Image 1 (spheres, rainbow, N blue to C red):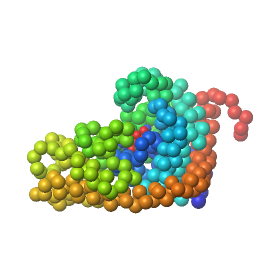
Image 2 (image 1 turned 90 degrees about the horizontal axis):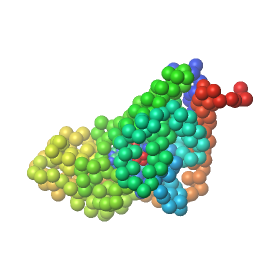
Image 3 (image 1 turned 90 degrees about the vertical axis):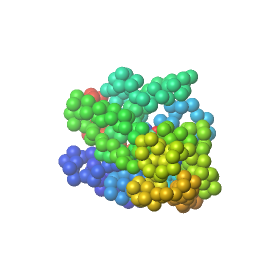
Image 4 (image 1 turned 45 degrees about the vertical axis):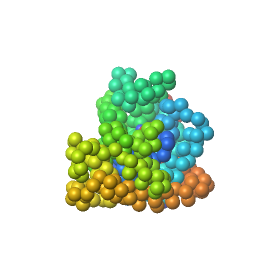
Amino acid sequence: MTEKGVYMTEINDKVQNERKKVVLSGIQPTGTITLGNYVGAVSNWGKMQDDYDSLFFIADLHALTVRREPAELRQMCMSFFAQLLACGIDPEKSVLYFQSHVPAHSELAWILNCNTYVGEASRMTQFKDKSAKHADNINMGLMDYPVLMAADILLFRSDLVPVGIDQKQHLELARDIAIRFNNRYGDTFVVPEGYIPKTGAKVCSLQDPTAKMSKSDPDPNGWVSVIEDESSIMKKFKRAVTDSGNEIVAREDKPGITNLLVIYSVMTGKTVEEAEREFAGCGYGTFKTAVGEAVAAKFKPIREEYARYLADKAYIAEVAKAGAEKAARIAARTLAKVKRKVGLVSFDK
Ligand code: TYM
């Protein structure tokens, strides 16, 4: 695994202008990686790792905000790591690790907590949604979630954060915290930009095209997974909810067809307009089959690679350890600077 120069110099302000841009993102290990996660985020991670210094992690600490069976969480973490590798995250190009293996995430989160207002955190729509959904477990972590996410991002002086639209509000909070901290203590953090795709920022459920496709949706017909087999993918697309009328066009009053056109566009690399032309005059059934086939074709190699990676636990451990070591080295610089700025004593030079 090659050590890229920028990791040794990026925190050095003198070379700040020369450094390559840093890309960072994370994913919670719950369920499996869905088509939504893939289109909105993970497929872009794969593309960006060629041009940027990239860090991607399994947000296992974030996953603790909802009650989980410990054994199941552990198994999902391994599975997600294998899924990311199968989706093309290349450890030769990206730093790939488990969030909990880099304690600096939690340490910075505490300091940022002391620079975040309760009012800001309680306004987050995901906090409100999740509080309603898990009314018997509105824990501190649920509210603190976006502050930990800000720490994830700011720790690595990330320039770009590739996410789906549902993370936009959290990203804005991370920016606000960075700006506030910089104003109070002097230039410390890079203020990150979101990288939200124009097409596919919100892939919707196949059963309710007005709702986000979510890996926690209890109706399995609403989502497909990157490791799902072809026949199951085809079945779900054939059952996908469509709209009245018979035109295959992307329009506000046609959320079902629009969602399918977006999925087809991202899977095939064609534009939505090209897809509309391709299916002009076709019936919904033919169109849904074509979208299913495009998704199944894209995911087939991912499913095969996934099985291979998951069977090789030693390789996952090797990559994850090396990733955590690299990430910890980068993070230590920012954390030391932050601690100094806020007035904590240090005997290190
Ligand atoms: P998570 O695990 O819910 O989702 C992972 C990524 O997938 C995107 N996404 C979608 N994009 C399009 N359509 C959808 N239906 C869809 N569903 C999910 C999400 O926007 C996300 O980019 N809080 C984050 C994880 C996180 C993180 C971070 C991300 C923790 N720390 C720091 C970026 C930077 C989350 O729960 O994502």
